Image (tube, rainbow over all chains, first blue to last red; front, side):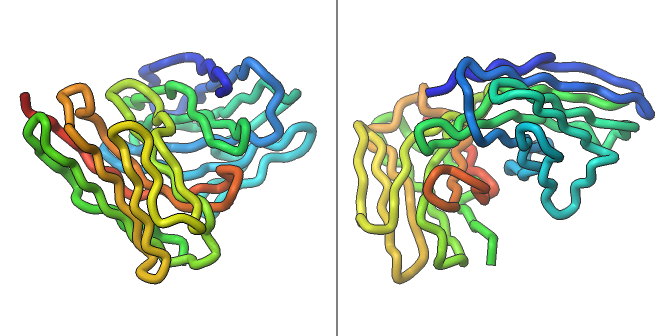
Length: 112
Length: 112
């Protein structure tokens, strides 16, 4: 399975600021995704991070709020912009490897 | 069409007992049904998965039962142990783990 490293593991931020989350994979992967897990809730797909092109966002998520970069096949970043307390969640990077979806350990974000 | 309904929301089982979690899906095009296990502070980990061409898959103490006509599948944990205490998510999607739709999750507590 792929080994996925996410940084930071947790952060506490002030409203109105932005946070960039990094995701590093130990092998090249074609498909990389970002999920959100709100407190006590299930996982919701934010977007597919496409290498060399703009990310594909799911309904309810927009690029201005969640800009994503994917400069190569092992790395991606998700930025949570202009944060509000409603953005307090766990953000998870995930990749498909050997036709299975694997998750990083997540970034727990609290917005005050 | 895209929902996956999971029940129960929480479950308490005695050590050595059988834990059963149920899921129902709507999209008949789905052909991949994984279960994930999540411990606090960790990302979800793939536990076991099934494709609709089989009715049951067993890996150790974990078994998935699949009923294609009813559009339902379930996870059975035999001889449940305190170490199994975690949140379990079912999911449905397409072969390769792409764009999975997740259930709401079941918090399992195994009492010793």
